[in-house]
Image 1 (cartoon, one colour):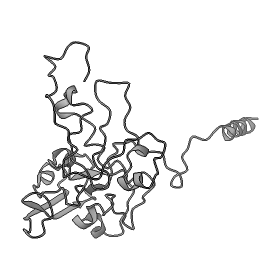
Image 2 (image 1 turned 90 degrees about the horizontal axis):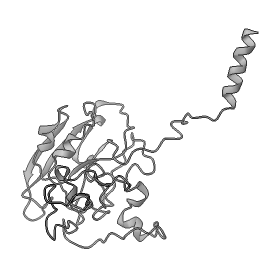
Image 3 (image 1 turned 30 degrees about the vertical axis):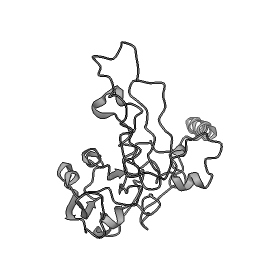
Image 4 (image 1 turned 90 degrees about the vertical axis):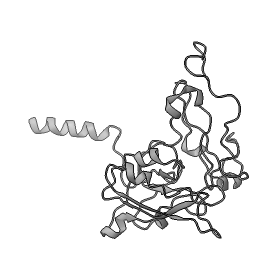
Length: 254
């Protein structure tokens, strides 16, 4: 009878709903600000955001980033500054995806995608160069042969940059303080810190300009992001500065 009791438990468990994800055919959705494979972004006019300041390499605790800057060619500048990232390499065998490089970058040049499933057959493939990290002409990350990209992994690559307000000041919530990105324009701000009822921007609403023009968001009620404007034109710093916690009336929210 002891054996039969064991089979009864097995039979009962088999009939219950499965909670296991059939990986790799099926994958669970990733958080909006997931730390995955890095990308180097461009401005809306196609220029690279990286200015070769090497701050990301200096702050990296794993010493996995190597950057060397060079002067911009006067006749064909690569970035809007005086210098650009002539050499940019990340060794993903060392990277711990702490995102400190993203925090240190002054131009939002380096951000992270949602991709974390990439395997290498040799060590050379694990060292990503500037040409492999730089986003394509559509503003999306390049998809290399050894990477397992799924729908949605290439969106919201700057979610971590747009997650917090400067110094945690509530007066900056909902105010874009970043420059536009190639293919996406000025992305919308994410959830504030003083409004728990507000929700983060979800992946389907973080569409590129090309997807909007293709009519993929028809009827979704999403504000169109314009393609025109110079670098940083979407940064709305007009009007009075946000009120400080000392001068803001009690119970008010920006």
